[in-house]
Amino acid sequence: MRYYPVNLDIQNRNCLVVGGGRVGVRKVGTLVQCGASVTVVSPEVLPKIIQMAKEGDILLKTRPYRSSDLVGMFLVIGATDDEALNRRIHADAEAGNLLCNIADRPKICNFILPSIIQRGDFVMAISTAGKSPAFAKHVRKNLETRFGPEYGHLLDLMGAIRAGLLAEAHEPEVHKPLFEKLISEDMLTLVRENDIEQIDRLLERVLGPNYRYDELMSSNRQSGK
Image (cartoon, rainbow, N blue to C red; front, side, top):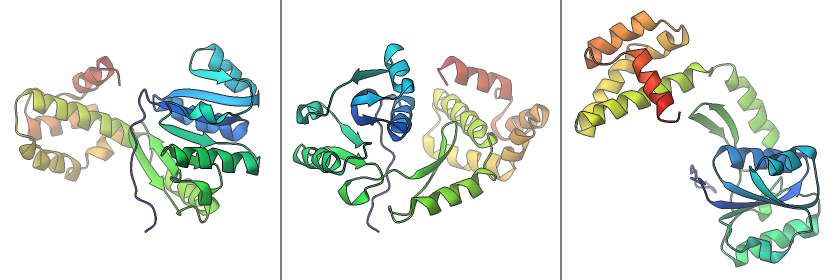
């Protein structure tokens, strides 16, 4: 296996995207969604990039790339169709020991981006190690029909339950059988069907009377979920 699978925390980290076309828009959107501090450098950009800059979501520099743009960056993405520029970005990133991805050029990347299915905080990644993005996309489309929004909702519920258990000073080791019981009792189906009455019955049976669906989900929203 060539690549080491990892989920990267880029919250508030400085990330650079070189290129403001369609690919750049996609890359910028994902970085912003993950909480990164994004700078875009490109002489020409699509209106979406300009809008994001006006709204304060990103910093935009409408000029050609400079090697100095990498100073203070944690990660850089090259999203241009200029091969010479892409290789320069890669070389600069390697010299600075930075994380670098050049769109559709796995040979000049030190990390690649998988195709993903996202349902809230539930994320499934499909990678072909850069050999066939088209096949990864095909698999993703097939899986998307099997994994609906209920997976994200269930994860939010489980997170709220975990927070509640920790607040009661339970040892984390004792939580595992409780979560396994909820899952084995098909909590996912109950969430999918929005059967609040049956969810509450299951929660009470496994966790006790202090755990109710609406209150748990409300605590999620209040905590910023």
